[in-house]
Image (cartoon, rainbow, N blue to C red; front, side):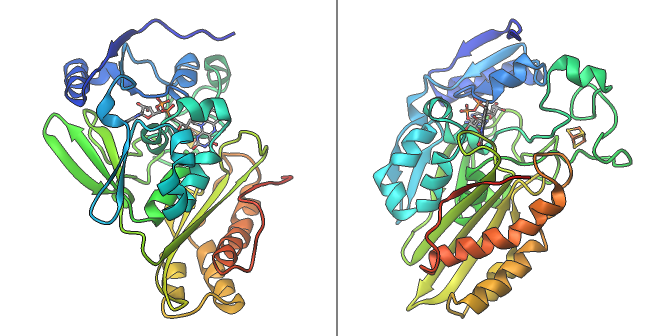
Length: 337
Ligand SMILES: Cc1cc2nc3c(=O)[nH]c(=O)nc-3n(C[C@H](O)[C@H](O)[C@H](O)COP(=O)(O)OP(=O)(O)OC[C@H]3O[C@@H](n4cnc5c(N)ncnc54)[C@H](O)[C@@H]3O)c2cc1C
Ligand code: SF4
C-alpha cells in the first residue's frame, strides 16, 4: 500500500480563511475539496504540498441559486448532487450527464464540481507511482527535464481529462474566482491554458467559488464519453454539444471536445457550420467532419491516438443526432482499443 506523506491540514470555514491560508503558505500549500484526485496524486508524490487548505467546511461553496435567468452552482457541490439536481437535469442535461459519468458512485459522493473543473491533466508517463516514474527517469511535469511523449518538445502535453469542463464551456458557463486581490469572473473558455503543466489561467491564491450557467431557453445539450471501462474510467474522448434552436433552426451551436489536448478544445468551425440550418443527416455529417480537425490526441492516454481522432467524428455525429432525436444510444461507450 502506498501511504500519504505527512502534511498539515488547515480547515477553512470561510472563503476568506481559505484565501488567507493559501496566501500565507504560498507554494507550500494546495487546496483540497473532495480529495478524490489530490490524495492519490500525493500518494504517488506527483504533488508534495506541506499544507492542505480544506474546503469541505465552507458553507458558501454549497448550494444552487437562481441568477438572472440562469443558475449558479457552488464549487463545493458534489458530483452526485450536480448529477441529480432537478433544475440541472431539466435545463442543463449535458452537465448532469457528465457529472454522473465521472468515476464511480463513491468518488462522485466525495468529488466536487470545483475539483472536477480544476482536476490535474493526465498522462501515461505521469499518473504512475514514484518508483515507476523514477525507473524511467521522470518527465518534465514532475521531477524530470524532458517530455517522454514528445522528447524534442519544450512543453508538456498531458491531457485535460475533466468530464464537466468541456460541457461547462459548451454551455457558456462562467467561473467566479476569489483571491487575495478580490473577486473576478471568467468565462470557463478562458480558464484553461494549452499547457499540460500550467493548465489553469487562475492565480495560485485563487479559489473557484461558483460556476454560473446562463439562461437556458431554447438550448439543449448532450455529453458523450468514451472510456475503456464503463464502471469508472477517465474519458479518453468527451464530446459536449449545446445548440440553441428557434423553430428547429439552429441559431447558436458550440461543440467542445474533452481529452484530446491539454485543455478542452472547441470545434468552432463545426459549430458555426450548423448555424442557420436544421439538424439533418447532411448537416450533422458535415459538422462531424469539421469537428475532427481540432481533435489532436497524442499517444499518452488509453487507446491509440489515431483511433481516438477517428472516433471524434463518430461521437460528434452521435451527439448531434441525439439532439435531433435521431439517436437514442447510451451516453457512455466502452470500446475495445
Ligand atoms: C479511480 C479514479 C477515477 C476517476 N475518474 C474520473 C472521471 O471519469 N472523470 C473525471 O473528470 N475525473 C475523474 N477522476 C478524478 C476526480 O475524482 C474528479 O475529477 C473529481 O471531481 C475531483 O474533485 P475533488 O473535489 O475530489 O477534487 P480534489 O481531488 O480535492 O482536487 C482536485 C484539484 O482541484 C483543486 N481544487 C479543488 N477544489 C478547488 C476549488 N474550489 N478552487 C480551485 N481549485 C480547486 C485541488 O487543489 C486539486 O488540484 C477520477 C479519480 C480516480 C481516483
Ligand atoms: S506529456 Fe510529457 S512532460 Fe507531460 S506528463 Fe506526459 S511525458 Fe511528462
